[in-house]
Length: 235
Ligand SMILES: [Zn+2]
Image (cartoon, rainbow, N blue to C red):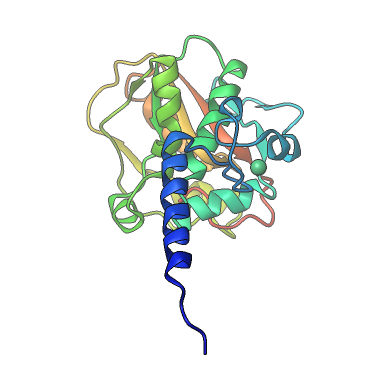
């Protein structure tokens, strides 16, 4: 017969209490492997950081009408898995890791950026997901660089997922997708997104911002994807 020994559950309980105290004091764990990180490693441990698919050149060729487009990583494992887990499985612990990568990539962008715009989600999609991943990964940049947030830009059409669409279909899919409620006061707006593929979404958003008072628009994304084999982007 298997008697449950009380000291065993007390020991388990005290271990749990000690672990929660420890987590409260040292809450950082690597988003990719789950190991507790050192203070300097923040949300991604050095070993995982070394293994990430960093691009040799984070600056993409300028996509008209953008001033600059920067993405530090390739949309490959484990970045693709992390972005999907953040968006579709609410693994929000990926957000600070991606935010740190975006903060580091800010050095590749022009220095006169004065406002941020996370790519807006249609209200229905945002309500379903409960958050906008672009807003989540932007908050650390805002805080660290003291940038203002562009408000009053809406996604007025619930565009289809860009998944599986050709470049021309992607352009058609996002045409007139955004609306601006008031003239912008920012001069150089940085659009923040999780992934850039053909840039159809961000270019459409950029055009809308330029038509409503912005003088320049640049883009910062976590990852850059080649168009083939990519699913579930820009949604
Ligand atoms: Zn790790």
